[in-house]
Amino acid sequence: MLIDIETGIYASLILYIFVLIIRCMKHKHLSRSLNKKHELLVFLAWVYFSGLTVLTLLPIQCPPAKLNIPVSSMIQLNPLSALYPSRGFSLRNILGNIILFLPLIPILSIVRKRIFRLRNAILISLLFSCSIEFMQLVENISGFCSYYFRQVDSADVILNTIGGILGFSLYSLRKSKSEH
Image (cartoon, rainbow, N blue to C red; front, side, top):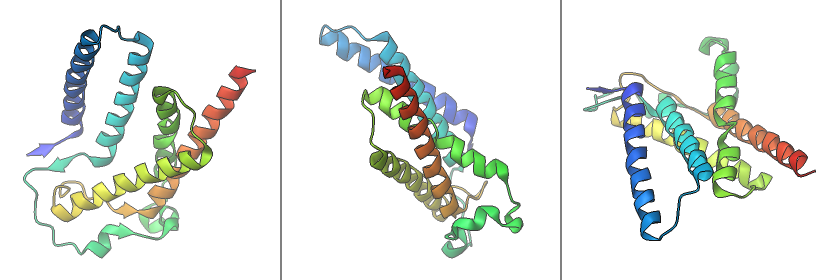
């Protein structure tokens, strides 16, 4: 059985509905009303993080298949690997990794109602990206990713972090202009 992207999207929406019901019940129990604007922002954050998960971790194969691939071939430590012709220099891959993380810090800032410092934005982007690459490695080693093999790539971590920094910079710039 293959758990594909479409299944991931449906599962995420169903899970969000359950979370929203629980949040409504909690607010009703506390005699507070939900802030509709904040709930919309939480929903958009849910959509972003679900999309991030779906794009980076699905499809997966259940039950896992046995792969006879050495772990060393699953990991690309050369950060310039994205530029190699053998990998098929892909502007789409480079821009995709940057664009994927552009909304990360602005969304977290809006939902958490606080602006992060540059240092924290870098750290958050780096940790999110490393978490994704680690999960892809776990999928590869466990055999869950036999259908669509993913190479864990240090270039992806760097490009994702650059995307997070750019998103932070754009959000900070917009925020400072709107305050003046």
